[in-house]
Length: 279
Image (cartoon, rainbow, N blue to C red; front, side):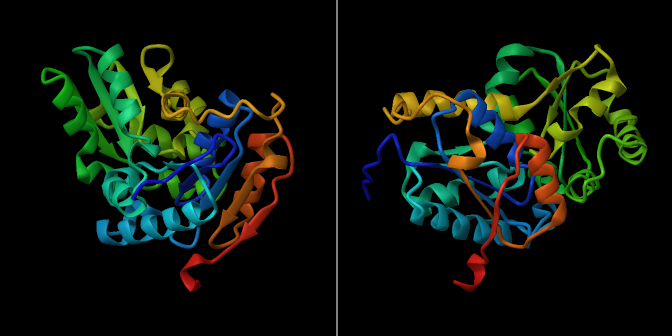
């Protein structure tokens, strides 16, 4: 099915919770003329503990909602959903290359910039068990050395507002001290929640390890895809008015989501609770 999109239509972004706000912020800073519609599936967070079939079901339902909202592009701002449901979302929406996941741009960056170095990946259980980063990096660079570690406490910890404090630093240090991650040259933050603790992770490693934040890499990729499809919005005034132009939906209201969104955007973000599962 063919779709005709216009440059002034919004970009749809979804995640299991607040983590995708890191991607939303990066996209809007790079592309200030773009409007976004964000959906945080807080009712089912964390996705990292769910089955692949459940994640596909959630993702397709949310993608349909964003398509109904007239979005010209859908960004799966969740590593777990990107690994489990990307192809399903592409198929269900029929939007082909206008569906963007957060894994492939990061993989391309790693292969280009860390040739034959030891690269670590930290992510949810579901993302790590899918082995998606190792498979895709090694497919492009068979001699690369990729080590992966599931860090299941981190996303729920961040979702509850525990970051940049002694508790979070202790948990982070415990994970990063595992022998599996010893002598790495770079570390991929394989969950969109993790840029919120990037400073704490960098504190553990100092300057010896490059911390790869996929949110900025994904934003650059989004720009390339929009330009390639002649969908980059150049019609609106070029100024950063994120909260005023954009819409934020959550499937279940949480206080930490609202508080964290204020930290991100230096302004109050109006959250709309919308349970698509009852529609």
